[in-house]
Length: 156
Image 1 (cartoon, rainbow, N blue to C red):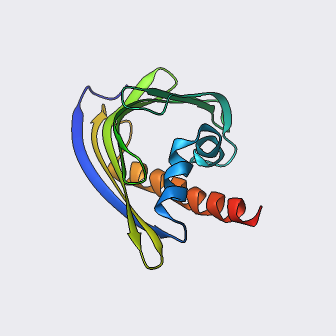
Image 2: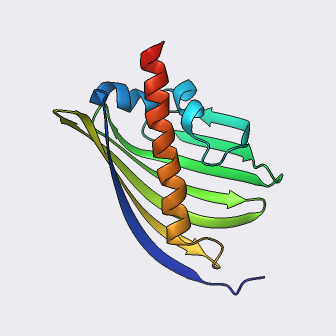
């Protein structure tokens, strides 16, 4: 077992999507859309997804990883301004171990080429179970998934 510890970190990822702020915001706000892009590993199977998208609402995503580990996201929406921003706090667990607790802010900024999304996450990492680079890389995969989701949704 790792020694008990807590480390803090923060990162920001900016992406531009060829979609309106409204369409990109809906990809975060609509439960079916969110479920379509929210697995950060190939081979993840969704066991549970509940989403109450409103300030004070809760979201739970439980996935089984390819090796059988249970990955759990448990979030609470703190602030939502339609088509502009989402602020939420959440924890991430794998099996019975809490990896992190975070505060995330997603901003949707209109631009000439579509929408610039600015995602900032402030984290507490527990007991050396995950690193800032691992989280940043996993989050980047999610944002690649959003791009694919938007492309597929446009093609339909």
